[in-house]
Length: 187
Ligand SMILES: [Zn+2]
Image (cartoon, rainbow, N blue to C red):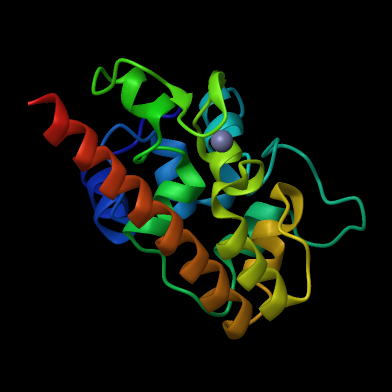
């Protein structure tokens, strides 16, 4: 895997307000600092943490246009923030992530049961907990909230970017609050 200069990584983390557990590739893409010609070819991490942007960074767009990552990096509008970065990277107040790093004992979705991990994919696109927030986003954008279309929709224009950001903020703030409540209850 490509070695990333530490200063470069720290700069990307600062821009995106990312958790420090994030991979080099993921944070560089999210912060828009990726040298496109040098995308890691072997990294599994980028395919899992950035599944919202693109499953496989090596893939070429079928229509010959920009790939999802190119479209993301070259977008005209939109700043990433603490909440959006959590949504895109999966490194955030999700129980599956917190458990992975030893901050939770359970990773199951409290609404859907222990067999279903509370990760970014589940919370944002599958769980009924945030149906209301999802509906608000769908009403504004006129598009169903789905993992495959989420980022293309977001980078479409300023209005859809703001709506998608509001969705991320609302969901992630709630998760953060719940995490704090659980920690408070555990003390
Ligand atoms: Zn759920």
